[in-house]
Image 1 (spheres, rainbow, N blue to C red):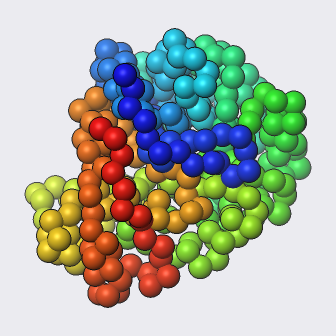
Image 2: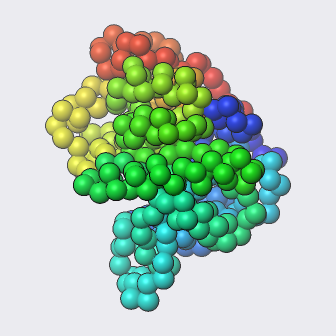
Image 3: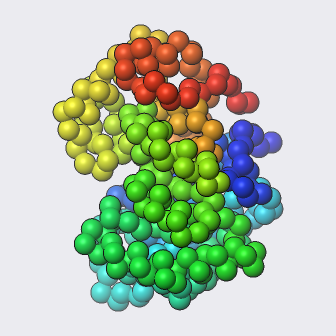
Amino acid sequence: MKNKLDTRQLGKTSLNVSTLGFGAASMGNLYQAVTDKEAQATLAAAIDLGLNLFDTSPRYGAGLSERRVGDALRPLAKNEYILSTKVGRMLKPDAKADIYQLRHGFLTPMPFDAHFDYTYDGIIRSFEDSLQRLGLAEIDILLVHDLGAYTHGNMNKHYFQQFESSGYKALEELRKHGYIKAVGLGVNEVEICERVMNIGQFDCFLLAGRYSLLEQEPLHQFLPKCQAHGASIILGGPYNSGILATGVHGKSIPYYDYEPALKHIVDRVAKIEAVCAQYQVTLAAAALQFPLGHPGVASVIPGLGSAKRVQHTIELFNEVIPNEFWQSLKDENLLDQQAPLPNQKVNPS
């Protein structure tokens, strides 16, 4: 019998997503190889433990993640899962691809390379290609991947104009005609999310790392804007690239925002760890549970690369954290004073 997790409505859509979701970058061999057997076991564990939101992308392993996620979801009834994938990159065959080396962070056997394309035609083609790779007839959520200055730098204006002039129209048509149920962005910055809300209606933003146990700046302007707009947050990267999972007292270098953490970040996490030790709270559990204190956050989706990691994440997600712990973080100015705190909860095991 499958377990059940709490669910929350995604924006104003009919979709109810599990509060803990599955980030499938590892299923594309992020940084290291995962065998097909391991990937199958990982996804099966997530399904059995009650996760219903699965987020993938053509970028993850040049299509490998989509293939594996599709294989896992295909035997299920459609009402048992909610599938998210992304547009903005077109995969093109690359006969010279070195499949034995990391390419764009992935050790993948898929001989393709990705090219940015945020036009109407590019988004429609990407959507159709994803259906083929997934081997599925439906995609629930379509996210525009990595739009914005964080990824594109000097090319940001060019790609934004592509999306504004024609790309958004593709999303709107796909949603209007029922091919997808929700549209959004999958990004690492709040600025681009605020900007696109002026173009049209978005149902969600998959935001990596920007509202976390370590940083709460979006609390004051961005999250209220999202709620007024009718868009939910799917919170990716709840560990801020690892530092909130590993802490800062181990032998390995703690990473924050994809780079070795600077001293002021390390010092802040050390103070949070001290409060964790005082209340016997696991740092990673606090990092997973904190964002869900905000009603605008529908789901938290850490990357999950093994069945063992899935099981451990469920345990962290269900760890009982006393209210006094959260209040102590506020008392020591380690959490924004206005941050809503998670309710005490225990999910069924």
